[in-house]
Image (cartoon, rainbow, N blue to C red; front, side, top):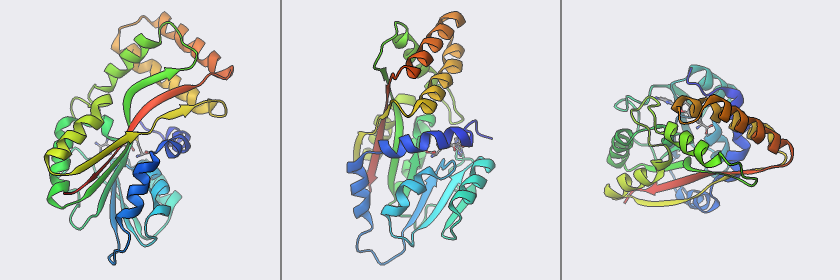
Length: 263
Ligand SMILES: C[S@@+](CC[C@H](N)C(=O)[O-])C[C@H]1O[C@@H](n2cnc3c(N)ncnc32)[C@H](O)[C@@H]1O
C-alpha cells in the first residue's frame, strides 16, 4: 500500500489528462513514426495506469507496455482497467533500480512521480536510461504553485508549509518536490539528452468540486505536520477554502512536463 488510493488517482486522472502539455504530446506522436519495430515503453510509478490511458491512443497500437509500481493493489486495478495482453505489470520498489528492465526500451514514462523522488534517484535512473538510449517523458511534476482566484490571508503560509512537506522523504531520501523538473533536466542534459520542459497546470474550477475538495483536504495533514501554523488557523483556512469552492472558486496547481530525447 503506497498511500495513493485508487479513488484519489481516478479523481485526478481527468485533470491530469487535460493538463498534459500539448506541445510535448505532439513531440511524442512523432517519436515512433516510420519505425518497423514494436515500441517498448516502461511506465514507472504507474498507479492504476493513467499514463497508459493518456498516451496509448497516440502511439502505435502494437506497443508493448510494462507498468511498474510497488503497490500491488494499484497494479491489480491497472490490470483490471486495461486488460490487454500487450500491457504487463511489474511489482517493484523503484528505490532498487538495478533490476528495472531498460534494455531494448524506447520510452520511459512517469506522471506525478518525480516530485516524490530524490536527486540521487534521478541521477541513477538517468544514467541507466542514457546507457540504453531510452527517451524519458516525465509529466505532471508539481512545481510549487497553488493559486486560488479568491485569496485567503493564510494562502501563502499554507502553500509554503505544503511545499516544505513536499521535500520530506517519500521513500527515496529527501524529495525533490517542486524542484523535480529543473533538477531532472540538468541531470539529463549533463548526460547529453535534449530536454524540453513545458507547463501543465491543473486549472480546477466549477464542475471539478470533488477534486478541488479532495486537494484542499489533502493539504491539511502535511501542513499541520510541518508545524508552522497552529491547528485552529489551518482548520479555519480549510473551512473557508471549502466554502469558497462551493461558491464557484477556482484554483491553479502548477506542474511541469519534461521530455528528454537521447543525444
Ligand atoms: C502520485 S501517484 C501517480 C500514479 C500514476 N502515475 C498517475 O499519474 O496516476 C505516485 C505513484 O508512485 C508509486 N510509487 C511511489 N514510490 C514508489 C516506489 N518506491 N516504488 C514504486 N512505486 C512507487 C505509488 O505507488 C503511486 O502509484
